[in-house]
Length: 206
Image (cartoon, rainbow, N blue to C red):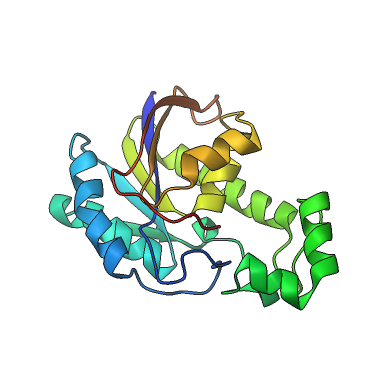
């Protein structure tokens, strides 16, 4: 049965512009201000289920979607952002200053270099795809929202939507960006039907 899956990036936090992975900050004032626009943009959908990452920024964003509908939020650890290890909360400039050689290697050999103590990209991708496969099974014939993180969304768009890394990055770089996808079966292709972005400008971050 056909399903609609709305993929959403969380709203902004004070760690915007840093490698904020497993670090768990709340939304900042700007992020809170983005929530009404997101809620209005999604008002056209009658969601059957709402999934989100277990990190606070995703849960707070999901609450803005779930509360008006009185739908419980289904928190999923597998949707959390990648762990950046020793690079957590650092800017790229700080990383380059701390270890210029590793920074050069990370860019040149991406995704085959892992930050010290971080989650390997291959392991992260497997985690995300396994979690989303479960969601796709549960979403059969339903309309669901999935509120998560930019890097998670990029994995889904690249692996299941067959987009280039650059195209996936462009579509997910803004906070509260939303991407409408659909599937005719849980194991079939994931089709990107329409794209919507927040009307508020947002700083770029990982």
